[in-house]
Image 1 (spheres, rainbow, N blue to C red):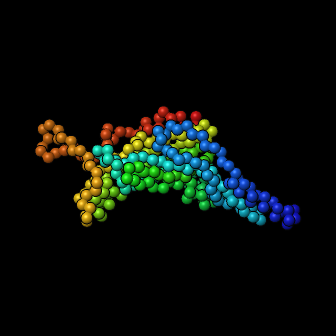
Image 2 (image 1 turned 90 degrees about the horizontal axis):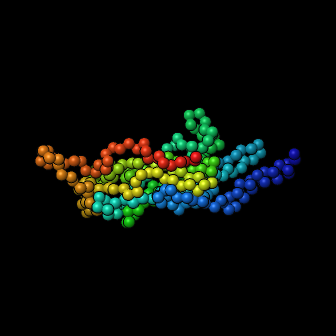
Image 3 (image 1 turned 90 degrees about the vertical axis):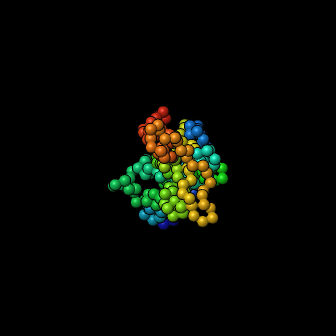
Length: 255
């Protein structure tokens, strides 16, 4: 094969991913079983790495599902609370991290450039209506998105209280979740368990704003026969430490 033919072949291979990027993506079919916890869904293509050949390299593209996880932050009286951060800690052991990993779960060398964007979640901060949105961008593998992790509510609140003298303490510190989407059936599920996060202001505060807005947890009456001044701890979630093993039951993922 002469040099001219090699150049033509290289140009053709380079143009292939570009035509795929410019072309229209498959229309998104959604059958929502997320109770509107997941919205604003769209598909996009991103550069995930390069393929190295003998005389040239090509750009490698990947398909990603983008959208928002949303919820509400209130105090114990149902009033919206602004400025509370909600973060996602994804489980990096799920299959969305890529197939054919190397030794110790590492990605192959040509996939290393993609590892930082495989599971992308931007922190959400509640607005004046108490609404937070966590933007995500997740890779589609075998026409599916299947990601597990946990939502962490106002992380570092205890350190903030120590430094500033005030903070919003979440009633529940974290909860597990799973995002599942099937492009063929449109099945979308987000079993997470809670939509409304309850926080209470703690600490007397320092400076001009002595206390944060919001109502604290109600103080239950002490049990009969208890010494005066004894009260049950505030902020404990209803039902105590219930096991979370039934969280994802009832969903037929990928069957």
